[in-house]
Image (cartoon, rainbow, N blue to C red; front, side):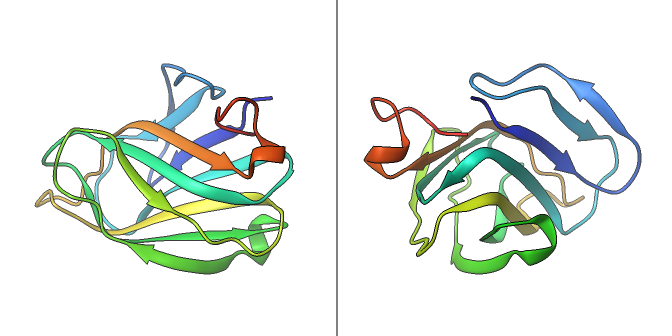
Length: 137
């Protein structure tokens, strides 16, 4: 089942086109940092890989992944550093326990105004938690 994903920033949220494999996403029109993507999984899973595709020039910088059993119980797993490119980028995730909530934090941006544009967000789990390598949620 697809995850609920929202891009939470300062200001009111607006509906946006649904991303493949995910329920409707939301976006804000304001800029600034930090920004993040939060996802709620339909069942507990152990994430193993994060895939992100950005619009070049609007890439997250100084990023990290948080995960936990609830939005108020997230723990920072590790930092990652995306390249300022348009192609799909893959980051390994070492999550010791199944979780139901994840949060990708963009503490900075390659854009002067702090904007981050994500075209694709995939979270993959252990083989027993995924179907043919497809994203879980």
